[in-house]
Image (tube, rainbow, N blue to C red; front, side):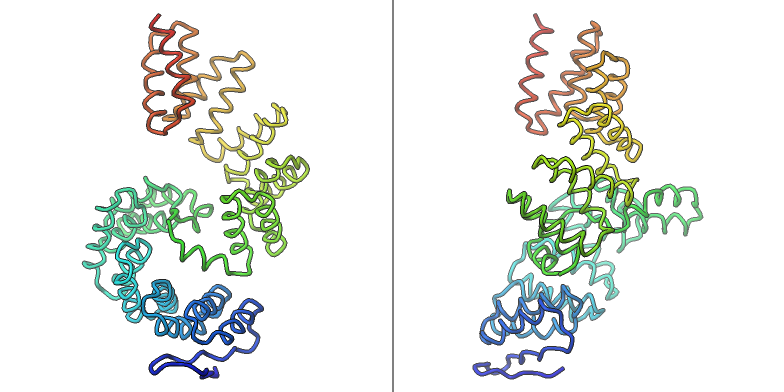
Length: 403
C-alpha cells in the first residue's frame, strides 16, 4: 500500500494511504474527497468507513488513525478504529482505541459493550463481567449486557435472561446450548437451538448511530436495507421501496427485504407488488412469522378475509405467541359469530392489551363473572403501553359493567 503524504499534514499525523488496486467505487469516491480536503478529519474518516463497509478493513485503520490525529475530539474516529481493530483480532489495540472513545463520550453503550467483549478476549474475564454488570445496573433491559456477562462467567442464568429479553438472540442461544452440552443436558441443548437456523444472525436492537452509519455505506443488500429502514422511519415510503428493490436486485435471497416490501407495497396500494413480495418471502423464509403477518394485514386492508385468515394462521404456526396475529384471528372469528374460537385466540395471545379487551367483551356478552377482571387486566396493559384510544374503549366497557 502506497502512503500519500499530502500538503498541510501536521507533525505526527499519519499519511493518507494510497488507493489500493481494485477498490470499489464507494472507496474510490471517498478517497477522491479525502485527497481534496487533506486536513478534514471527517472526510478521511468517511474514507475509512467506506473501506471498512466494503471489505477493506486493513485500509480503513490508517484512515481512522489519521482522522483521530487530525481531530483528537472526534469520537467517531476512535469508535470506528476500536471496532476495526477488534474485527481483525488486534484486541489490545482495540482496547486502547475504545478507551479513548469513552474518554470522549463516557455514556456510549455500544463502546462499553464492545470493550467488555474485548476485555474478555484479552483474558480479563473479571473485568468484562464487572463492566457487563455495570451496564445492567444502568439498564436492566440490555440483553447484550446479559449475554456478555454469560460469556465472562459461564452462568446459564445470564444467557437465559438475555433470551427472556430478546428470544431470537442467536448468539445467546448458541452459548446457552454449549453450556447444556458440556453438562450433558443434550435435550435442553436441542430445545434451546430449536430455532437457531432462523435466529443465528439476529441481535438485540441497539441505539448506535455510528454503527448504523457504517452499515449504510456498504454497497450490499444488507447495507441498502439499513438505508431503506431509515428512509421508512423518516416517512419516505417511496425512497424505502426503491432502496429495498435495489437490495433484492443485488441479493434476491434477502428475506428481510421481501418481508418489509409486503408492508411497504401495501401501504402505497400496490397489491401486485405486495403479493409478489409475499411469494418471495414465503419461499425464502416460510418459518418467519413476520412475512405471513404482513401479508395478512395487507389482505385485511383489501377485505380478502379468507386469505387473511390463512396468512395469520401461518404466522401463528411459525410463532405460537404472535399476539398481533392471534388478535386478528380472534377478531375474524368474532366477526363470523364464532365466539368460542375467538376467545381461544384471545386467550392464546397472552399479555396483549387488545386481546384481553376483546376477551373481556366476549365475557361481558356471556355474563361471565370474569369479565371485569379481564377488562381490568386489559386496562393495566393499555396504561403500560400508553394506548390512549384503547384505554378509552376499555373504560367505556367497565362503565357499562358498573351500571
